[in-house]
Length: 393
Image (cartoon, rainbow, N blue to C red; front, side, top):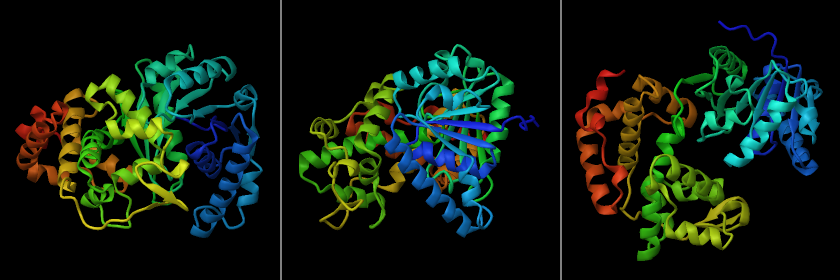
């Protein structure tokens, strides 16, 4: 086991949704100091209020000692100067928006300002660790550390090795990851030794965007209420795929799909409907309007019933196919790793359990969907069609 007793000071770069949650679990993990950086005081003030409330909730759940919140908050240092934020940090976790240029700009600064001993981690959900790392001029000390929100609750952290990440950095990051407590239980660390766009969870879930992009345009062209397609996948009041896009922000969806279109397949390009919404500035929940109109944090829905165009079976077929691609590419060697990672990160079972029984039927479903939509990437890969993946437990 790699020794991590020297990791005492942590710095989190970015105090948005993910950054403030990483800072909270860093305090809960027992780091002596946690430095939280943002360019704006307003963002830091919001983050402080969020972390304080979050720690009180963890007290009530018994995850931290009763009355510990005030003591833990004394270890939090809010900083607007990035050099001061990282000058003593043993580990730095970057959590800024999914923009490669922005991340490389941050890592260029981390390479200059962080101590030579520091581990530099990026919380990117989809992007190349290697490309981010090269901007630091010390790529051997850079690792991917992808958390899943709500971070204090969900167990999963994906730890991703870049092309030049040293074994010591990779193993130390894994041990650090185990220190972060989670309400759902012991942390599950998915060790990813070969990077690929989206890693495991987002690679599987974002690939379903090919279907959803097509269905969104179909609904617009044919006048089908969007909520009816959402109801094909979930029962209200649960948020369906379109509502989740709105919830996270259509600008975030755009950035992710643009990256996948460049790195996996051009077929991930944005559809007509989402492109129009973005041009109009309708980004979803944050602007009050996107695919849906939003009121008090909830989408306004007017129609009941299902459209009959999508199904959870299709969704799982797409995930099984993408999981088989990860096995073909050597990103992971075991389908159990993929299923365990999906359960820990999404609180949903992975596709291989039911896939072992249904791969022939699901392969046929994907063949039909690909022909109907014209999306070639949805065609089943050889490992899925053959069922040979069953030998790769």
